[in-house]
Image (cartoon, rainbow, N blue to C red; front, side, top):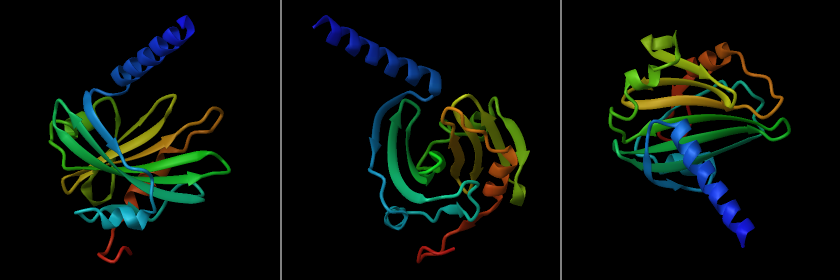
Length: 179
């Protein structure tokens, strides 16, 4: 019984610590839908996302998911495009946040502590990296976009120019799901 109690306390502490260190946003409610085929997720969206034509990894599997958050700052939703290379254990996500308040992901908040880079079409991008991964954030047409590349142990980082090239390759989907 003591072991179970210690394991439970340890798990709770890890969850609390990770929530406090990974985000300034205090999530009070979170809903994650199972990853599904990209076309199915896109058919559920009420907006037309811009998606990249260039992904800097060799993609062997592509799925998407919808996520919904409720925080003290407001509610928002995300569509997550999961680009994987199963053999190399690589994951490169495009996350598009919508139905948000500017308090959550304002230009100022996404720029904080990140390297600024000029993207095409006069859009400002913000690059960041740490031990867990790399990311590039930007806002366009009221949506917040970010690429996230997760680093597994021993994996090399992608060159930040790969993120910029990927962001510059985004194209708006046509209503039938083609670009």
